[in-house]
Image (cartoon, rainbow, N blue to C red; front, side):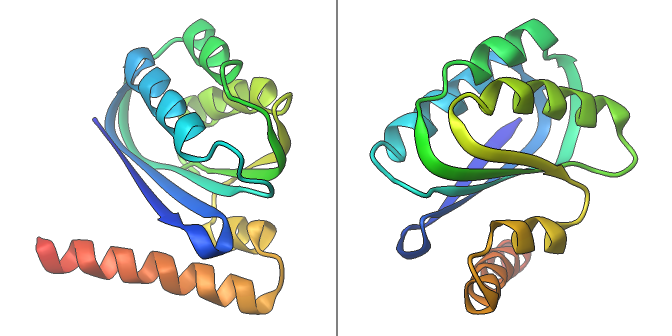
Amino acid sequence: MGFERHHYRERRFVWTRITGSLCDEDLREQVSALNEECAGVVGLRELGDCREITDLRRTTVNGTTAIAATETVKPGSRFAILTPADSPLIFGMARAYQSFALAKRGAAHIFHDLNEALAWLAEDDKDLNALKAFITAIQNKHAAEL
């Protein structure tokens, strides 16, 4: 299992990719690290990309909701959770996380489409294009490394 966080600090944006098998402890470490890295950032926009999760057997609803409750307050933040359209289990876990994370965030929404998620996070068309270019550049870098 892996978490990759890609910060676009000038735009107060974080793209977090989650791949492979997810467990409660890994999620706890991710949330703790993000809390530390983004402390004091007002208006943070985060995309939690769950499309590459392959296994949730070691993830519990109780663990997920307890971990979501450990998020620090992120004033004015928006959190888009991107899930695969064909996985009701991943959607359900994302929904459980969302329900508890809302207490610490300005808004949180679940999407199945990357472009819709980015449009919801973006401040305007210029920002949307910058976020798309940022993600594309990272994806291209990963593809070149394979």
